Image 1 (cartoon, rainbow, N blue to C red):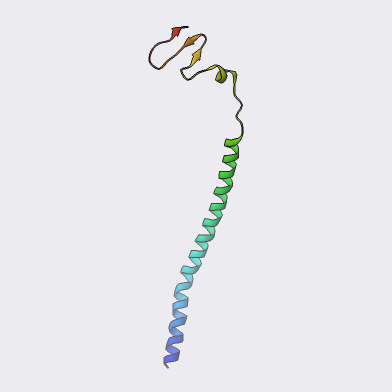
Image 2 (image 1 turned 90 degrees about the vertical axis):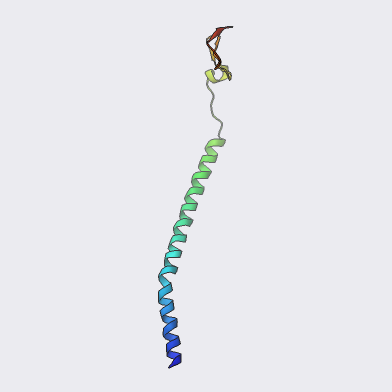
Length: 82
C-alpha cells in the first residue's frame, strides 16, 4: 500500500511540474530567437556605422564655430567680418 502511495505521489508531482517546465522552455526559446534577431540588427548597425560617410563641400569648409560666406559666427556674439 505504501508503494502505491509513493507512485501516486510521484505521478502527481510530475503532472504538477510539467506545465511550468513547458512554459520555461517556451520562454527560453522565444528569448533565444529575440537574441538572434537583436544580434543581426546589431551587426547591421555596426556595418552601417563603419561604412565611410560621404562628406559635402559645406562640411569641408565649415569649422567648429561655423563659416558662413566670409563671416565667422560664434556662440559668444554676433557675426564679424574677417
